[in-house]
Amino acid sequence: MYSREYIVLMITAVQSKMARAALGWGVRDLAREANVGVSTVTRFEAGAEPIPATLEAIRRALEAAGVEFIPENGGGPGVRLKKALPVGTADGSDS
Image 1: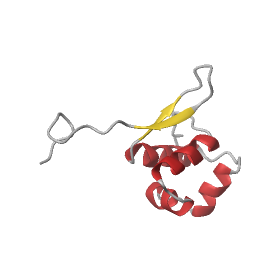
Image 2 (image 1 turned 180 degrees about the vertical axis):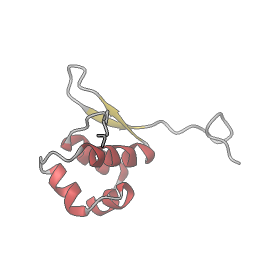
Image 3 (image 1 turned 60 degrees about the vertical axis):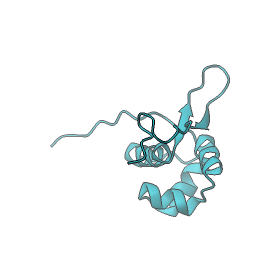
Image 4 (image 1 turned 120 degrees about the vertical axis):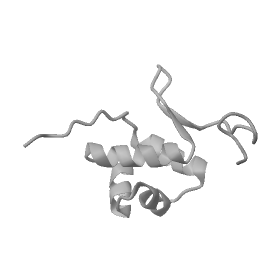
């Protein structure tokens, strides 16, 4: 038997809430996109520590929606939305 190791970019409950606010998502939206339960998101954002796979699913869902997580860097962790590329440029193609 083997164990899976997860290397997860840690995100905080506050970052999750800020990311949802930036996207205009409710708890149900994040739960759906991350394929986790609504109560799981609610517990995480209330301060419970989720299992690494759940945290990874939440992080990936938010990043797929355009969120970038900003590390502590002395000023506290945060989030921002990725800058949209104009249509017709590399990665912003219209086809």
